[in-house]
Length: 439
Image (cartoon, rainbow, N blue to C red):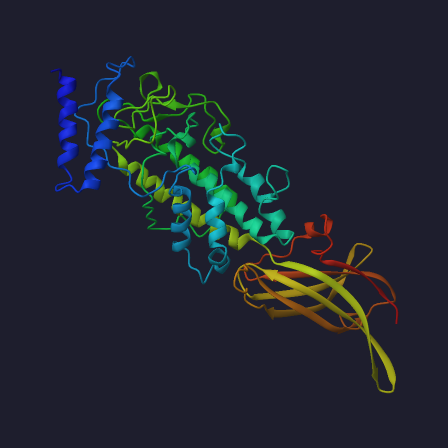
């Protein structure tokens, strides 16, 4: 019997004995594990030049967990990361994230943020602003069009792409599929212990930050048997701070591009590698560390998005009202508008007056507490009315003529309704209204 066969028998024996007393179900699992090991060895000596790994640790049976990629029967690691992040976030401080929880989890499992199925990344900034056909309205365009569910779904897609950058094969831009042993390593145990920050950067900026951190760790992740780096970025990869997923390609660290993070090593490019078998690794802690990094980054993305989304104005209207006063008729303007806000019920507003494009002054200021969202809704909202403005700005009555009112709503984070809503394709979100003062 060869040394190779001896080692395989040792591994088979270990597979049966490590779990102690076996139930019928456990026995069946161990049989499948052994069959997977036999399949990986039956081809005989490999031509890759790698030293034989010996003895082979007993593979873990697949848990009722998830794969990192988004096609697993039991859900995905992306979904598990999103759930862990949402559990970590303070629901009182970020109520929109709690209200949109299911939408965000589903969005985080969306692979459509990749430009194509070979891309290891995606245009997160484009997905935030939503001004292209590819972005499907992204976050901001959908949000400003009152398509809140779609906006938060696309935010989930940004989370997905950001989480991907904690995966070494993504950050190193290595061609891989669902056979990659890192992404197929079973477990959804995402433990977030600390926040990265308080969502201080733009929501889309965490993608590059996570990629840079993962790339900087690549040289330290090595096979303890051979000293070979598990994942290797291309020598002419762009510098940190630039997205490496557009090229050039990195590669696995084994000779002939074998994936040596798996035990036994996988040839992912020749069809030998698959994740239907229970692969193990000498360094499973890498994946747990990267799961935690992905989770902490997701917390930051979501908190940042919540703090950056602005209040919106809807259905601004101005009408003339009259009343009898002191034996005569008095006319004034009544200004009505709805407000939507994602994070806090408390808003302030100012209604400024313009003439011929120049600011004349402020007509009305106020504050309001909006109603909380109903079940199934995300946004705080309310209908506001400014009564009886008589054309007075700064204690002086404006002369008769044409003017423009500009409603400026500010939320508790200091965001104001963006002026771009006045030049988009719907009038419902406009913050400007033309008026005629005619006393």
